[in-house]
Amino acid sequence: MIGTAFVSRRSSLSAGLFERSTRVVPGGVNSPVRAWSAVGGEPVFVGRGQGARIFDEDGRGYLDYVCAWGPLILGHAPRPVVEAVVRAVPEGTGFGAPTAKELELAELVCERIAGIEQLRLVNSGTEATMSAIRLSRGYTGRNKVLKFDGCYHGHVDALLARAGSGVASFSLPDSAGVPESFTGQTLIADFNDVASVRNLVRENHQDLAAVIVEPVCGNMGVIPPEPGFLEALRELTREYGIVLIFDEVITGFRVARGGAQERYGVTPDLTCLGKILGGGLPVGAFGGRREIMSCLAPAGPVYQAGTLSGNPVTVTAGLATLKELAAPEVYRELEEKGRRLEEGLQGVLDQGIRGTVNRVGSMLTLFLGPDRVGAPADARTSDRDRFARFFHGMLARGIYLPPSPFEALFVSLAHGEDDIAATVAAFADWAEEDSRR
Image 1 (cartoon, rainbow, N blue to C red):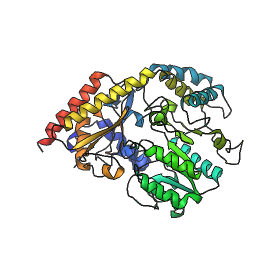
Image 2: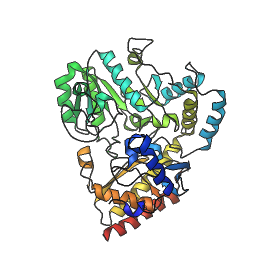
Image 3: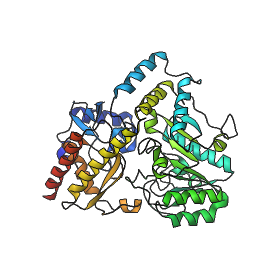
Image 4: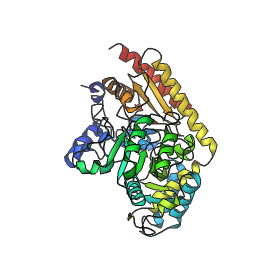
C-alpha cells in the first residue's frame, strides 16, 4: 500500500480527526485534492503555520511548499498581514455596503496590472471565471467559449471540461451533475499548440465569445507558454473580436508584480484574480477594459452580485500583502529562491533519475518520468506510483508537498536558503533510498 511506512508512524490526532471528518464531510475533506487520493494514505490535519512551516495537530513541523495552494507568498502568519487584520476586525466583519478599503484595493490592482482598467471583487477564483465568461457573452452577444486541455478554471459547469485529462475538440463534462448541453458550448484546444487554436477560432469565430487560458498552466503541473503562444492568442482574438481572458488566479502577483501579462508582455481583455489578492483569506476578482466592464450591472445589462464581495477583513489582508510586494527587489528575491530550488532538484535528477523540473518564478513542478513537459499530454506520462513514494518519502523527512503529481510547488519569501538546501538534501536522500527498491 502506498505510503504505509509513513502512515503507520503518522499523527494519531490526524488519523482520528480524519475518521471523524468522514462521518460529517463528504470524503472527509472540503476540497478533493486534500484527500490524498493521488498518493494514498490519509491527510495530515494542520494545526498552525508560521513562516515557511506548518505544524500538524501533534506539533510535528514541515517545510511547506503548498502555501495554501499559492496565496501565502509572504509565508504563514506574516506580521504585517496579521496586525492589519487584528486592527480591522473590531471595526466590523462585513457591511454589504461600499467601503474605502475596497476602493483602495481596486485602485492598487488597476495601477499594477496593465490589462485592468476596472475591477469587480468577488469571493473566489471560480466566481471570477464564471463571471468573466458571462460578461464576455453579454458583451459579444455570442455563446461559445474556447479553453485549453489541462487548464482548470474552477468548478464552473461550462469550464469543467478537460480540466485535467483527455483531449477533444468538443468536450464532454468532467463531472457528474454537469449536463452535456452546458459544456456543448465549450471548445477545447491544446495548450502551446497555436494551430489547434487557429483552426477552432476560424471555424467558430462567429459564435465564439471568449478564449480563456491560464497564461502559465498550473493545474497539470507548471507548464510555461512557448514563445509566441500567448502572442498568437492575442492576435487571433483581436482579429475576430473575441474576448481574451487570462486566468491569473494563480499567477497574479506571483510570477511578477503585474502578473503573467507583465512577465510575457501580452495584455488580455479580461483578467481573473484570486489567491494572493486576499492575503490568505477567501477572495476573487475580475477586471479588464473599461468598455467591457461597463456592461456589468448596475452600469450595464450583465448581472453579477455578491453580498460578501469586498469583505473589509479580506480586503485589509489583501492590501497589507500587496503593499509588502511593492518593491521590484521582492520579485528578484522570489526569482532567485525559485531558481535555487529548481537547480537543486534538477541536480538530483541528473544523478540518474528520469524527470524534469518546470519553473516560472516562484512556482515549479518536479515531474518524475518525462524528460520534457511542454504540454498536458507530456505531464500525463509522469510516473504516478513513483511520485506517491516521493510524496510520502519527503513528508517523512519533514517536507510538505502538494499531494498530486499535477500541482505546483510554491516558494514564499519566508523560505530561506537553509530551507531550500534542506529540501534538496531530503530529495537526494529519498532518491538514494528509492533507487534500492
